Image 1 (tube, rainbow over the protein chains, first blue to last red):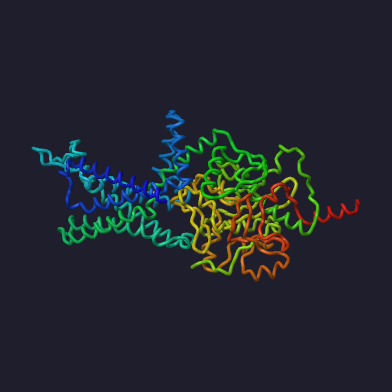
Image 2 (cartoon, each protein chain N blue to C red):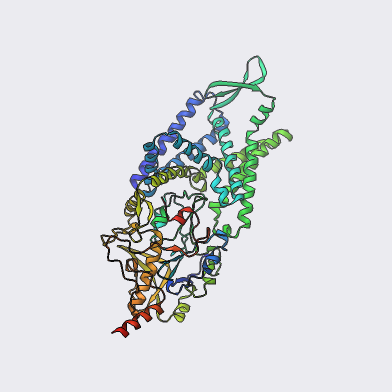
Length: 388
Length: 212
């Protein structure tokens, strides 16, 4: 653990210092850095340290480390063939950009997540560069109706400040707040009405992030209300309140549910690993003979379970390891072991003789008693008993 | 509210009649509406009517949770291993392949592992799990130790299972003969075919005696 902590600490320090360096660089030696936002900057730097530390610790877990390595190996070994590249883009768009897998879980949940995700991403895309001094707006000399966007100290395009484009751009955080508030309301509705969610949800894990996002969005909107319609009344107080909510969210970011933002891309590595598993050699169950996963996955899992302290090794040379038994056969063998225990007590003769052929499968693959989707198998992987 | 410590789940595959009531009952659970977490299998469709109902055994040291790269499977303080947390699960199949009991299911479309969570929405408020409340043969039973001992005087529950060299202890217990060893080894059944109903056994044994 000590070595893990040291490595994580080193990575976290390096990434945080790197971000600090980029802030100095991007704001041109802090020339465009807004000193009023310094508290936000330090909160983000703290969050960066915490997130990197947790991410590196997470990657040290044997199964995570293995998937990380295998994901990259799969990506690099296959190269950027156009068809595979397009499939990767499609997977990224479907899973990450559009959250389609969440919509399949529950439509309301999907809408809520999409609103919250794009609201927070939009807010981060606006806020971070502004806080770091990487982005600022400068009036165009000689034409005070125009603003020029300066990114990382480099002047880019100019636009009329009183235009519709300017209105939309300057109120970007307002639109982001609307999205987040809609998402939070839908999520809260589900959490308060759904009996299943009610039994499993925890305050710190499930409600706190919603409260924090709601507080950030509402206090942010109050700032706009104050300077737009109330002549700035209460602005200082609301600004402090908003800063507290934002900073609290950043400080909490590495410890709670929102860490999944940084875990989720691992799904793409899993997709690559599954593709490789489909195309590569398969592992056959040593009871029924059916292919149930990729050979690589079985070998990887044997290694991971061993590393975790499990020993599912079997002395029978025909089996070698319990990992070589497919899931349906595992379910059957325990019931058969119970039957054997009763037979040992009551007596009786086995009706079916074992095959004399030493290489023949010991038994056929057990089948779902109810093969209807959702009842027996939940998906194609269950239905085909193939889990690449 | 934690699951009461005196209530336990007892599973007795030998009593299963394959009626599918548990499958239907399970799919009515609120935490996974319309989808059954019960694994109900025919062991050998051609040669045996034997069926096996499998619920999560809720291991004390769950292999599924340990091999999860996303840290998505959590065990509650009262010993219930919950289904994968939705924000974290990356549908890698590690848990499906690592569980020695063959319990987890993979919902491919949703990109989500789903499994029995002991109807935590019910058991945590003192109710029975759906499957145990509808099982007509009591192959799936939820109650106190005294109740099960009164109902099955010839059986005893075991919660220790052997998979090769690995010993796994569980919250859910399996009923075995009183004379059986205090743990059940899965490998004992590895080479056995589905034996069907014990009546058939007896008939065969009687027939064999006649031949003698």
